[in-house]
Length: 113
Image 1 (cartoon, rainbow, N blue to C red):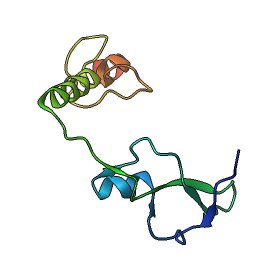
Image 2 (image 1 turned 120 degrees about the horizontal axis):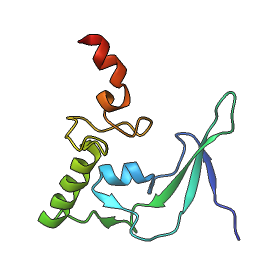
Image 3 (image 1 turned 180 degrees about the vertical axis):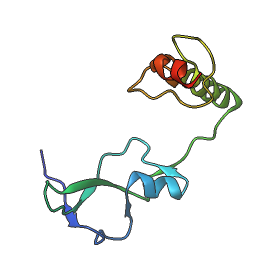
């Protein structure tokens, strides 16, 4: 397997972009292979690596259809519903708790009353 060309941070050539940069341009990689990578040095750990894709081979982002909007709304609503009390918490339930705050800490609610 050939190694990827590696460029220092902020010195990638024109015509290459990260996924976020492609998205900001309204594009997506579209199944193409990674063309290169950039490395950003860090002090205490290994460097951060970002993969680069060719802009001229990128494809337009697929538009959101009404069915996709509905599926996204349903998924977000499920993230707000507490599995223990089955109520809409009004916020996304933290993964660390797994339930809404009143269900996770019922003793705090009793102290406040």
